[in-house]
Length: 224
Image 1 (tube, rainbow, N blue to C red):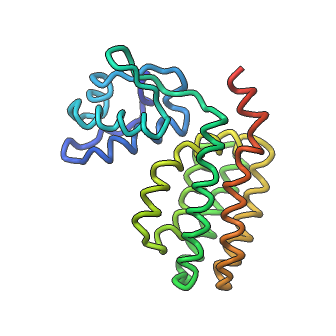
Image 2 (image 1 turned 135 degrees about the vertical axis):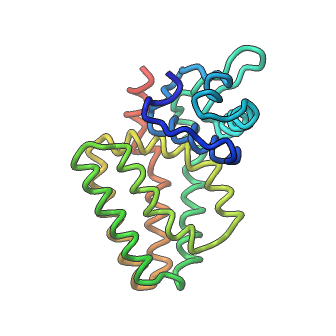
């Protein structure tokens, strides 16, 4: 089944980015499983759009390494590859570190509370074993500095490579390592609140740069 039954139909007037995000999120949260075949006709009908934005979205997903496209044959969801995580982690780590350093003088009490609220929801999701909700809350937390940095080039790079790491984080948040992320988030927020850009940047870098090392055993086990 291409998408979960509770998916909301996308309005036909929405742009191809909406289709891309829906399919990307389906891959990241596991609704679209590794090896699952993606047919543009079925996806278009399910999402309530024409085949054109679906085809464009599949091309973008292929560029991001989330699907494997075989011209004239099929397009399937790719499996999580440790090498892809290795390749993406340093780039994403550097971009998040740069974002928080660039944004450090722009944080308001509202922004700090937004991050704390996201971490509360993250902790609740981890306690409940809800990995999808944990991923969403984690993404919202880290998106605050990115939004405040307002660097379009940085955002473009993150849009390309973060989904690869999100799939890996899904494994992380299913393990005992998830609880360590709660404390790491708290340290990050505290440094953002006090204006410690270098300290916040170092935490962001280590958060993402350490991801592949932490996951090596788990990813290998998933693939076997």
